[in-house]
Length: 506
Image 1 (tube, helix red, strand yellow):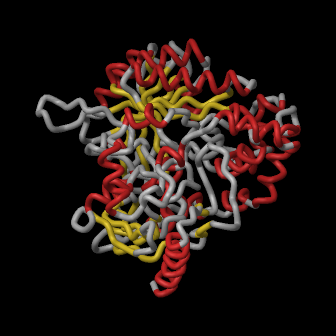
Image 2 (spheres, rainbow, N blue to C red):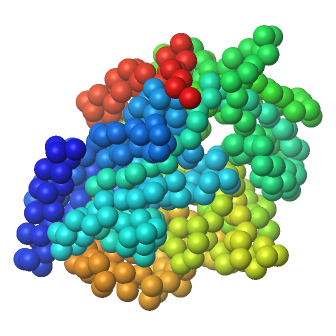
Image 3 (spheres, rainbow, N blue to C red):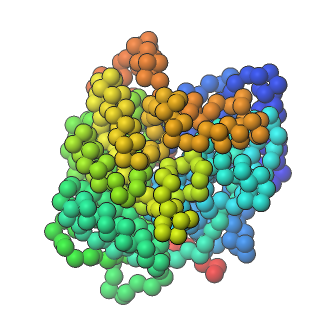
């Protein structure tokens, strides 16, 4: 812990230096799963990238002390050694614990446990004036609640205490084919009421072909059952496998997936975003080409290439959370307006209000429990022309408001400031900023807002950005920078893919 304390003291001293000079600064984490274009300035930057260790796994308390830049795969590898697992694990291995807390992390177990921050018991933070504090439900509880989803605008998270639960060897998944959008939505709504389930999500391949997937943790599998994996180059991509298994079926289909393989089942192909690389380069999309190019098609490499190529400026990556009652309407709209398939469906338990997470203030019959939401993952090519791309995003934001939905803030966000604060409780948020000396930090709106005019000027004013617009220069540059990052070695060497299971100390 002493190394951690020394690192945090150094960060606090840097923050205090900028605070006294009233000088703005940026935080450098070392990685990102946002699709907004970012720049790393060496000057006026507080570097927290070294905070990337799992410091302790407490098997008695079932908690882990984790620095913010620990990615999900390293966290899972550390806890599985003790037969434990976080209740919510973001499905991309490179998403960090700090990112899950400060952003919005909702996955297939979030119908049961809520967003990732709901499994965090406490955090250590460096405030905007350099003070080091602890926040939890018992200490600085308003900060603890407000900092989740605030994208670092209330302070820098430097340590998290994360809840763990007993792990099991496998997830028994059941694929329920559906033949209409209303059927898929209704099936998910029904399944999240089942207390025996640990995981629920869904995939819409078309208007007539959807699959609702439920999962139960188990150590027991029938002798005749075949174990299905997704992490090796010869394995199928998860979404393609599910599509093939259910295409001509009306009956539920069950199979068994090793736990870590289930948690990171969408890594290869980045859900289905990796298929866009084949479309961009005009390459055949088949098992041989996916296997041959496997190193490039894990999420870390895809994100590196997406940012370096600057293709994110015309690629739609949006998560849209809505009431179940209006989810069909937004799906119909996206089909007509974007024509993007597949779509991801993920049920979410809401956080208590006020919050910076997606929310809507409608309760169940008890008048207290907030109704669940349904997330729709919309990921695919948008208009290539910048002005049309911006117009489509603005139209999407208007439709979301019309259907009482909200987008996650990791992606392109175009709301004007007044529009943004119509969605969130500004008085509550500004009160936290004053109380915890965060007013010198960029606000959440300033951090997530995309300025389309500045973006266009940056493209027009930079020869490099201008050149990357032309096929295939952007894609080739993205591949080069992804290779130089060495991220493919991280995927190759991940121990969660070991086929001899995990040690259990239950």
